[in-house]
Image 1 (cartoon, rainbow, N blue to C red):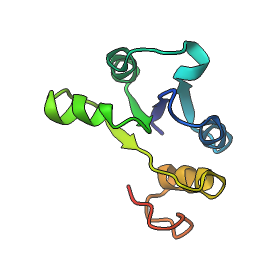
Image 2: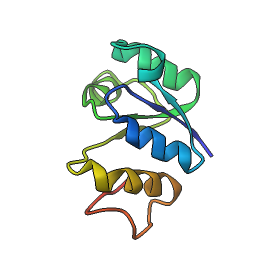
Image 3: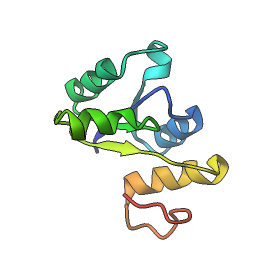
Length: 105
């Protein structure tokens, strides 16, 4: 199972749910606040982790600047109470019918 790196923009309940489901998640908010996106990006790469974020700036880093990453997952979760389970399901099995709404990976 891959390791994930959650940017500080990700709600703690999502990180908690992923961990409860057995994922190894580095959570930037637990390490240091207001970390530059480039530093977070490099942390994820150095740890060979998939970056989970709600910050579209990481798309800029990957697509416009052409930086290489293992993976970046951009979350858009309007109803967090229903979504933390769906995020965990998506990492475990992207085709799981338990994914809420029209969540896709």
